[in-house]
Image (cartoon, rainbow, N blue to C red; front, top):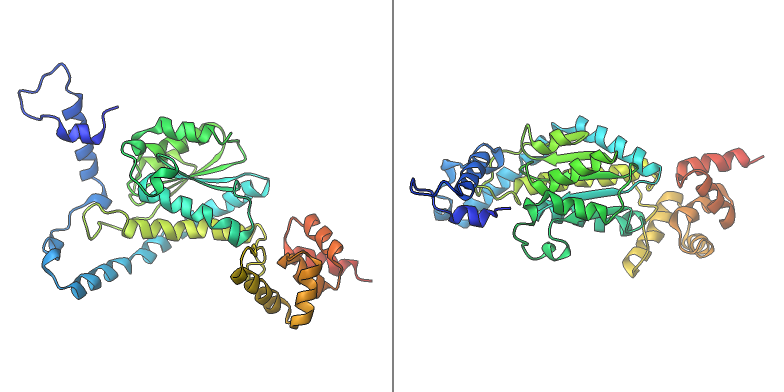
Length: 334
């Protein structure tokens, strides 16, 4: 496959040999494609930005960023529909897989990596795939984003099933890696979501659920780590967080499945139990000790007045939903 660098370096004059027109033709086709993308549009009103005082540039950038939440808000119905579908698949044991290249891929890996400490998920439940593999998190892996085949290989390594969810993330909505991931996953019967920042994108068209957050041209032409990246981060926050709420990983707005893996999180665990129950320090310590530090179980022992094994049983019976476990405990009370 011709790389972008090769296409850019190819001759474009009339004397170009007709025996191998693909490099220059590929360059022209790609340039025409990019010219039609909102995220790549040039804004002549900012052509002298490098001559402005730093504070003025900062104000311009801040003003641009302020437009992103409204663009996300316009897509909330589509986002909510995707979340309900994701929660249904994960509720029956499926995984949530993000697939993207560059900034989009890094944002997916970031969101996935924060789910275990926040919601006590297994590292394999929410997975981030980035074109070029782990090395691409810190170093650009040239050409990886242009390979749909690479996306298929990465998904094959996960043994994807119809219970899983694949979210392709791409600012342009045309990145072959993201589109290829969604296409392969959908062919297997997995649920697919396409998150992009251009309307009418191939990625959204390829997915069961298309989410197109159109943030408009960037302050720096084509630098989609800016508004587009911010929009993607906001949407990924929603996809994972609200899915976990639907799965019973929270009690109200408390992270009752938090994994207490360091001193800060251990202190947070005690605070969460206190906020949920109003209990004193001694009762909280006793409950956490009896439940091996499990916040959700500790809350249930205090609020329902049950012992630790009963709390564990009730939570298992109700799929980890604390409110449902409390209701079940109330039904047991004579």
